[in-house]
Length: 187
Image (cartoon, rainbow, N blue to C red; front, side, top):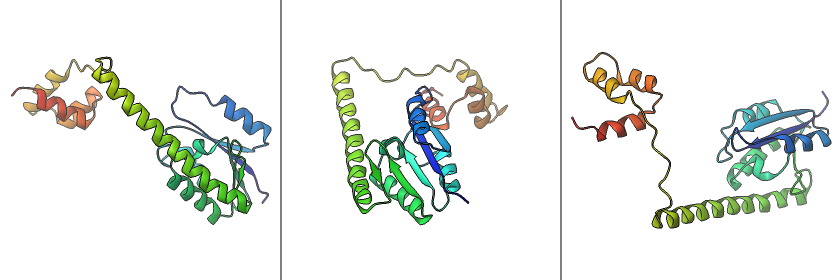
């Protein structure tokens, strides 16, 4: 079986576009592309899993940048280790990293640490900005979702007509939200 160039594309939300990354993959003669529209905070992404299951010895996984593949140094190095176990190469175009070379392997480790530092710094600045905005009265947080049928369904739960689980499902409400709202209701 002939080796393949396999592309992996990730954007953080369903609203973000993948076109730029897809165009890059076409210029690199990538034969198969896996696209996730999910946060890179962990490796629990459906297309990433499919790609890791698919790759075979001699294949090369190509990404636009390390941050599209993994956000933490640990996750990146774990993923690269899984690829290496299958004798699969890894190339990141933005950082010009190719794990087929000793220098590429070294640079991957350096860039992994830098990507994690960048992400942690961004989150810290975001938290600091929110605290400042709250202190100035400009940030109130996300508006609470309204559940107009909550009281009705709660009374049905208390009467034993339906279960709490059924009520949560009808409302489209998480268990955490249900019990938080329940604590706020006087008995």
